Image (cartoon, rainbow, N blue to C red; front, side):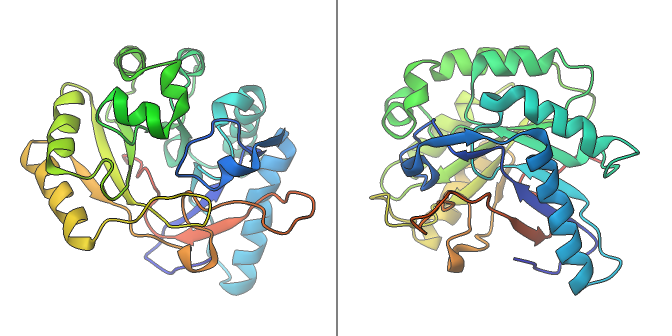
Amino acid sequence: MIIPDGDKTTQCISSQVGCAVDCQFCATAQMGLKRNLDAGEIVDQVYRAQALLAAEEPGRRITNLVYMGMGEPLHNYDQVMRSLRILTDDRGASLSWRRITVSTVGQVTGLDRLGKEPKKPNLAVSLNAPNDAIRDAIMPINRKWNIAKLLAALRAYPLEQRRRITFEYVLLAGVNDSLADAAQLAKLLRGIKCKVNIIPFNPHPEAPYRRPAPAAVEAFQSECRRLGLPTYLRTPRGDDIDAACGQLANRSGGAPLVPLRVRKGSPAAPPVD
């Protein structure tokens, strides 16, 4: 999927085929984990997308990457880091570390390890709930590392100057989208250098949730902003072909395929220039 928007071109790439994390709103979770991708397979997604892009629009290059496709990147830590080093090397794709974002559900041991790296990508964390009761229900990993443990790890995470942590928040109608939820979220994240990306739920057959009405989405964002929490709305892209955030899954009945999505415009976690 390619959507023209200025000079930026962002690609969403995968680190695994399937996923073991089992977030209840995510289609990929229904696949389970098939296998990790090696660094070559991760990097190859970028080169293939670049070739497709160049064929459609010569001179256009991928400028931003988000590890937000299938899989939990920190569960495939070594291969993800190897791919990052290749993609940022002058002999590789020569991308900037500041224009690459790794998204995690909040695997605390992986966050601690990533924080010790000499060079780090931008960090995005799928939070999706303002309290443990909701997060336990929709993200089973919270039963191992609850919100308090996760936020403690993030408060200790060494951020470079002018960088912020991005929290991703999938809005589920009647689950985590009330004004009270917004107020609790703003209080929860107070004192953390961060921003929040609101992602209205992208429906798929594997999940019993609904996307909130536009008015509810707007009200949630407005309440967060009123309370001082920088909040941005992610416009759904690719939901018409089941390729939007949370919809990636193999429905062919055959061998799992590595998903490939390209979009132009602002990345899911915009880098600070």
